[in-house]
Length: 183
Image (cartoon, rainbow, N blue to C red; front, top):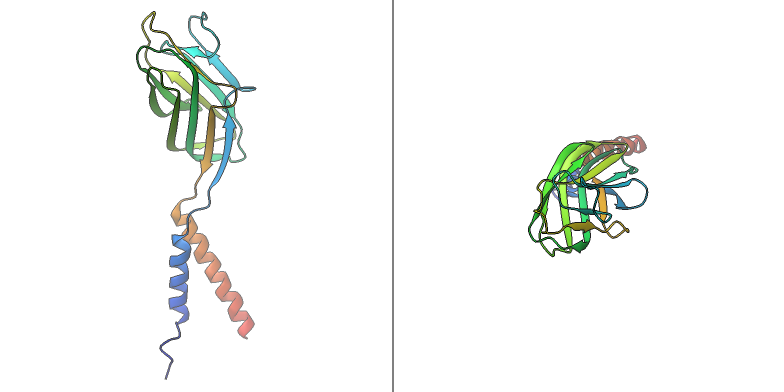
């Protein structure tokens, strides 16, 4: 008669897969600051103080070369060091020329924390923050702090199914090794 307290190998495998599948995915990220090499500021009139924008088509652009070549999450902490807007400026985020998301900068807003999920392939990521509307004359502008306070975190998060498959492979390998030692 078999002892009911001892789990069968099949039940142990299922429990192992459930535990591995419930573990948080491995996250890898690279963080970069806006400014320095690879930073571009464009203002259509050419009359603005550096990094100030207010006209549709004006932008801040930064190129990043992370250690990862495929990304699926972009997190931004943007700091505005001179926001004198009298009305909201609507912005879009483009990565390598493709739309990632949009956000707004309100009058007197000092920073924005943004998070967007999308799959992009590198090795270089060109992030453009572009104005979508024009602030009327006399209603001022906003400037991005490009001294290192504004940052982007570019992350790859494996899909849960990938983690389960990895766990299943490791469990199978462990079972095979265990079987060889028993012989």
